[in-house]
Image 1 (tube, rainbow, N blue to C red):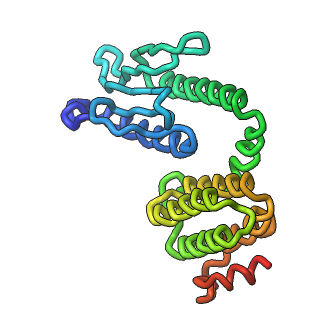
Image 2 (cartoon, rainbow, N blue to C red; image 1 turned 30 degrees about the vertical axis):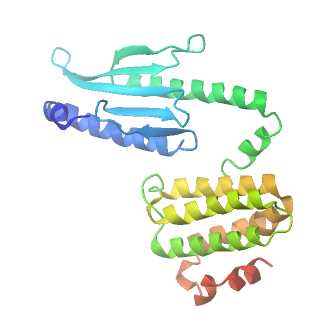
Length: 254
């Protein structure tokens, strides 16, 4: 949204637009394994899936002087379960939120049907590991873990890399893919929200399970998962210096 368009709005609309933006950012963050925010100065807010097959645009924010209400021009696709084309509305705040949820539910169902059709045996993993790691802190949608927690996560991911590299069950090509995943998690750790980071760890656990059941149990089984959760929540004040060594993690989990 261009600054001049925002500046032309009365205060009541500016405040509502700000609160809506916070709502939309949280909405996407909680579903960011499937949808993303698109950067555009031509719209107030745009959301799409990662393949860009489905779009939800809030194009304009205006103030209706006759009703003294803020109104939004939206367009999205698919229109509904019968029609894949775009549709457009002028709508108020609460109906907008309801329509966004309907749109998301529809595109999620479309993708589930498509995925199950072409990958009938993989769907188990999508459900099993969706929330393998979770974080329920109030600020999880916006803030990263604190520095001490990041330290724990960083060296835990280093341990995962060590186990992947030294696994005798995984072909080199699959090792390379898993290592790319771990390096990306570490690289983005300082700026990634808690909820997004835990989703990333869940996805990594899922991919390791698909690749090697033995490696999964070596790294991610329920006992080890609970140990990591304990360190993140309660144990960061007494982390030993040895956390930076692979031997620390091997001893911790053996």
